[in-house]
Image 1 (cartoon, rainbow, N blue to C red):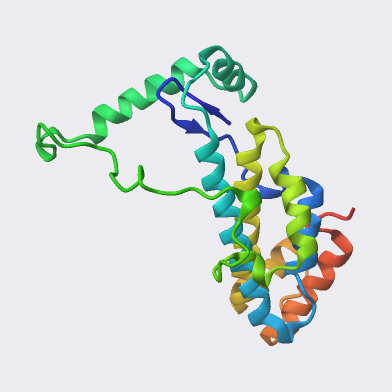
Image 2: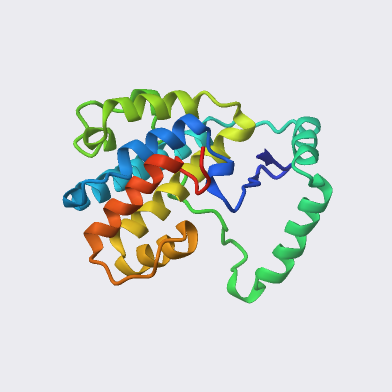
Length: 222
């Protein structure tokens, strides 16, 4: 992750969320969300939604905490470590600006900024309001929240955003599988080499959770 001289945050993430997620966080998410108790499908999906909401709040807090000043030397070093050139990235943004902006759609006094963004209040992830009825931690196991705070929020700044994005992506994948019978069946066939049999949804959910209990969050044996 790095910011260019325009203050734009760039992330370099793997197509595989587990590559950007600390093993401890992935294991905790698996334990809490891949439940072999298929009768708890509603509870699993509720916990998936809560994790996504919590991670999104942490992402908001991450962006709010970034300093206004941009250290070009530091940003260039981060870009180089990611295999990118800061100058090339900025040149690409200039090209996109020229292609995407239609001057006929902009009045002389119009602003491209969203006026509501300045009024948005970001939350400190370590101080979520215990009285907030929408606090996603209310439906999550305390142990899971503790592990996620330790594994994600204490990461160095340059990799923290990628890990938060990876956590949300992984939870999205699992929630989709738990909710969609056909996708889960296809996943078991393609990712786990399971026989393609017509099986009811709940037994497939149980089978998927049990497979990951042995494999861990990924698809190769630990």
